[in-house]
Length: 167
Image (cartoon, helix red, strand yellow):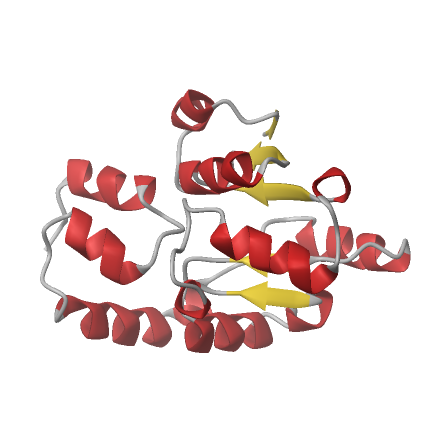
């Protein structure tokens, strides 16, 4: 069955928040979350790293930069995906939606990362592919770079005024 295009857009617009919050906002039963996670895990082999990202991570690490991940995914799926893609080694810290009380767009997860990394607002930048990433960064008072290779169209990302945008 093909999902309604509007529902897919709504789902992607809420990306970064916890599945529980997304399903609540969309009026979907919480019982669907287990099915969603099961299918997501079964299809994790379809996930591909965007061209050049591994080189970017390698370059950043060689230059001494810390890299961290702030995601709406749960910790179990996140760690599994990162390990399958062989990119888990690039992240100094990871905060998932089930690690915090208030996931994105709330800035809590980003503030937790900043505390763990012991960095101030002037020494961190958020890079994200969804509007909730932009809102999270703005709520934390840090610069945000929106990237357009995710599921959210550039014109929608621009609605939340990222500091920079990369195509």
